[in-house]
Image (cartoon, rainbow, N blue to C red; front, side):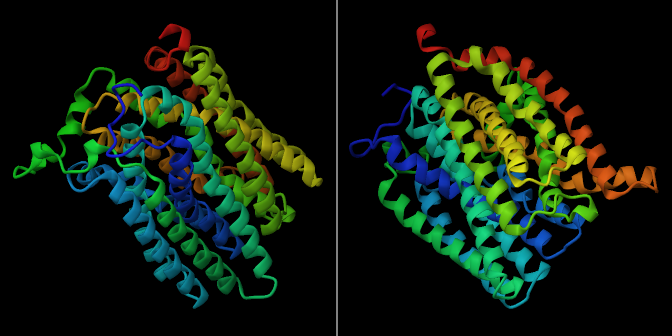
Length: 446
């Protein structure tokens, strides 16, 4: 292992033993809060603009977490934070399940989801910091696709399996009881993942005690010093543009969920919750996982220089499938499923580019990797949250401009708009080309 990796208090464990479990526990809560809730509200006939706005707002803690994440670098260890927060999230999802079963909607449910979002956002920062500390640069690239894939496996379990389960249960139970049972089961899964990671995650020796340098002088200046250094560092503005704009088009495809679930009379594809869960939440997410694994392997094998443009193309160009669906509206499920598969495969392949960019930016922030990675992640989520939250209102603009237009016309115009939003993504990718290619060279160039 290279010098950039941490020393361990016992024999270091292979990343294959703990990286999958760690990132499954990171991906599942995020899916349950920001994605599965969108499916649930759509199932309960909540207006699209309202459900998109509130589920987008649930992502606010991921954007704000740099305000408290430095505690992870100062108090305790990332490993301890990870385990405790996984168990806490299990309890919060069980509480959300009880609230849903009792018929409580936006009030009690939103409290549970916001609390789970704060816990999940903090957990993600601790997990990412642990990943950077415990693995060397070679393994960081090697497992980048795996971590992205397992993160998205949470979407398979959540938006796929759990959404399908809710659709099946709703045939026999009330919608609230069906979704309550699903969230209670999700809470149990989080508790089991917490126990698994307790025994399988290694113990980096350098992370076993709080930083001596900050004892007795934990002032605001010290607390936010890593952020100041990062913001003032050369090249930050380029990195900021990349983090805010790389996923501009993809972030607005949250509209795909209500589009797929809306009846054909309302301009949608008319899928049932079960069909949407299978095609988008399961098949699509498996395609996304495959794309993530493939891109991680490709970069570790051939370097970033060869795969930079293919990854940028992969995350943007397949968005055209929704233009096809909106204009031709095929009734055959296999055609709709194939379109979703193609788009998600490309998303999985291209998303690794953003992940590796953040890893490269945080890699050399010795002692502050967790805080800096949290800052970069927050900025990238800001670039996703803002367009995603207003996407439902953007969808209504065509109808406001053309009162005679129907919902189908609005979907068609919106998905064409998404394609236009891919242009900034390509621009910022080439803006960061030098930094990314230098950070992840081909093995022959090392």
